[in-house]
Length: 193
Image (cartoon, rainbow, N blue to C red; front, side):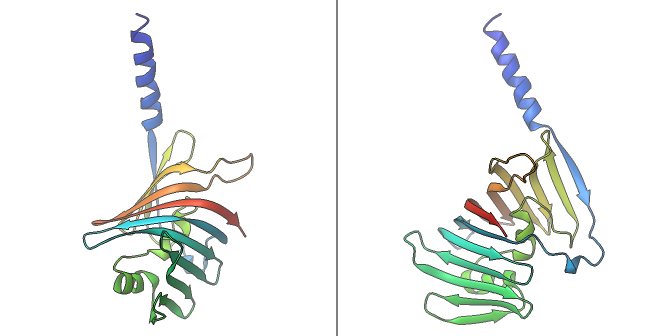
């Protein structure tokens, strides 16, 4: 009987952790003018698709008017400098080649070979959905987002920074899936601006 009790309590704990509720959201009117909160973060990123695998470090500074992202190799060399503002998306390679496009997702796919979904990611990295399009969010028993499905992307959250009372618990580890591509991001340092 004593051997059976820990097994039962373990099963109950697993059932409790696995319980999520799904919330469906619709686009917000005039949502193009709703900016994600500003932040500055450092972390690691790995990308895998049919053609390639990439892993390295990144630095991302987001404000309501622009985004600046630096991608580094594992040894610290700059792979790409990417920024987006009201004029479009721009990318400078390690060979100092400059490219421009209307949006970040198409630019990174064309030049780097993988899509960086910046329009959604600026919200997803904060554990939120974008107000621009429909979304489905899975919330666990603690009220924390564990997954978001939006714009054909599936975002899964596995770890969060510890939060203090009256403070948001920002995601620390998230995985994004889009068709046959996987992006894993680990945030090492988070600063709200």
